[in-house]
Image (cartoon, rainbow, N blue to C red; front, side, top):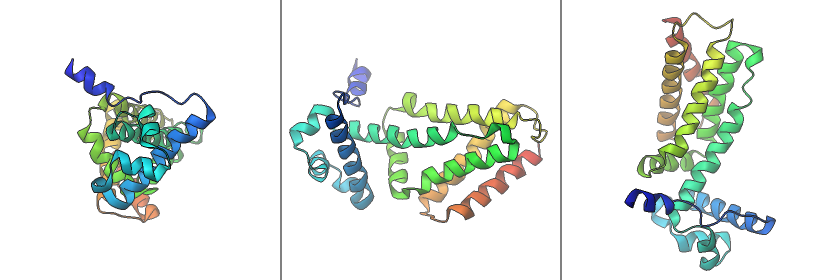
Length: 203
């Protein structure tokens, strides 16, 4: 029961059904993102979010029961951008094009708003949201399997395992670069590319 109650406290109170309510929710999410980027968790309160969004605290609570629910919605919003990129992997263009696209997508997602990404990574580990956010890894892995299964891919043995390993390499390097506050996306992409190719060449 306790788990169910906590899970409910991470759900929006209601979903926006009209353009006006959708605008309100988007304003709340962007306000939350900007507060995290500027002040971190110290300034991250429901009152601050509502004030920054230009809505009353009552309007805020119509949609979100607490700030953790806003954080979860932010996680899902940022994940949606990555999932959209993954959906456009150019499988038909061959192994290298597909792999480069996925590395570019992962780096872009982390460095587009690097401070926000770092803080959300922390919150993803704190909040019980693995069942939601884990789908990003699952979809990324499935796309990697398709890429690594191309005829021009290098001989890599078990494609499923290789895809898990490549995912770990990409995610680990990109997350670590985010923690170090790196901002040079092309240089990071080249390093990840070399690491992945090095791994694949040894299988």
